[in-house]
Length: 270
Image 1 (spheres, rainbow, N blue to C red):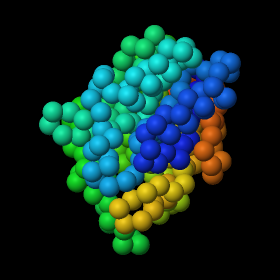
Image 2: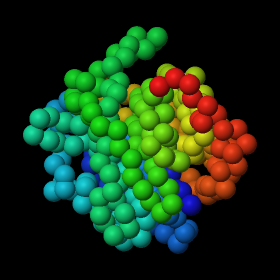
Image 3: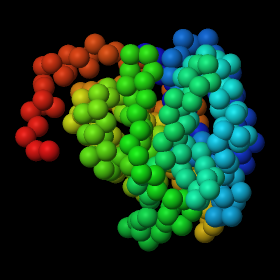
């Protein structure tokens, strides 16, 4: 399975972000034998005020971003996992991942469960729950011979989500993110590697990188998009700028890890 991770610097201009995604497909995905493309969290719109984010929200499947992402999956013949978009629903707004198969069928829709309501050590306050509602459902999907679990950014800190996905048969875990620079430099890699090791799964984690607008100024995202194997080794890592990172997942390696160290068959606690 060949994977392409899109590392982006999305900002509060939906049309420009969609154009950037299309350019990545045309210049880096096309002709590379890619099976699965994964974009980061808030791929089509990131930052801005509450009102700007709500204005960028769209109903599915009618929205501009929804149809643009679906069309890319069809045009390039890939499974496209859109890390997240702002979904406008009858009961509010959600941070929602969408997955399309190569024919444009919607394979999965995951609403982020754990919201980033945090005050960092540097005193910066984030309240994602002021803008969006939490999701309630654990979501997985199948692509080829893979069963893939959905998560978004802050979800990565909650091991029980990934344990459930592994027990449900997942061999790949996805964590598209717009991870904060302050915590990213210390927590991003060790937590992702832990999720890979403890579940003996591949982990695909594309991120946002660089500055974007916030009401109080600008915020930096950590980037460092990574593909991690079931042993916990970082197989591929993005540079510190927007771009596409392509790598292959060897599922035979996962079989070997799970056979030689069958830790997930040794659970004694529910």
